[in-house]
Image 1 (cartoon, rainbow, N blue to C red):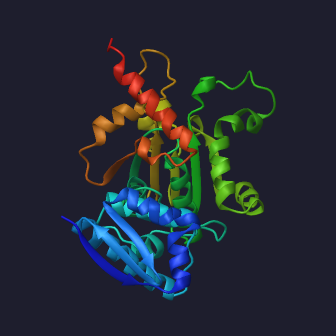
Image 2 (spheres, one colour; image 1 turned 30 degrees about the vertical axis):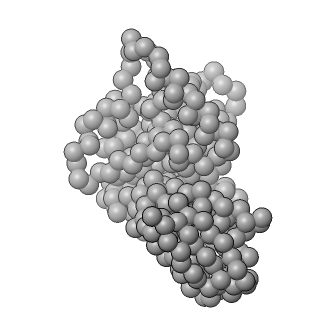
Length: 321
């Protein structure tokens, strides 16, 4: 059963909504069972009644946001359309007014998938969150963004970023240079996220003043980390002992986020991943939230999503040992 509805938008708003060569509207049509056409300033929507209702809500909210002076890029609109198609309770106003934030004034951050949105909500609501899933899903970047936001809002007084240097077995002595030179290659992705979100001069000053600390996991032993936003990245490469050590470092006024990809464990054969164990041990605790990502959440080049999917299919076809 299909029905037809009509809506009206100003010409400039229509141009923004439809996008270059109507790409935005074509993308929305591909997500929902609708056909959307324009006759002058009038929009004609034909298709499944439930999908028409969703499109009507999108267009009405778009009109209101546009009238308030909001601007939109094609990519931002497509991200919003995708999330609304996945979760009909979500709205355009949620996306552009509630779920976007600018941690330091340099770069706007917004969830690009429904799982990313749930992850941001989980980090806002809980003191300990696990972000588990394949590479390229924004687990680390969004955690760093939330950490920077908390620091600038004075919710914490410092940020601590750490990851296990498992590729060197945490034995970094054979590498050239001083200690910082030795550990930097393993921590570089965390630096990259920081410099993407905060002006480089500010990052450098905060690193010098130890407001931001980036260090291998081994350096966390024996410390109590209070009033801090702490991120453990690449947690699939922690041992059980390292994971327990990290989780028991969390002090008063702190938040912790643990990220990892269980498909990329580099530990020696026979050694249990601390991330896998923590998932089993802590999953029943209400104050801890586990967020999961899959290939649909990959926000890198489209080819990366295809590669992740191909490897996942290949591993599922292999006989179990």
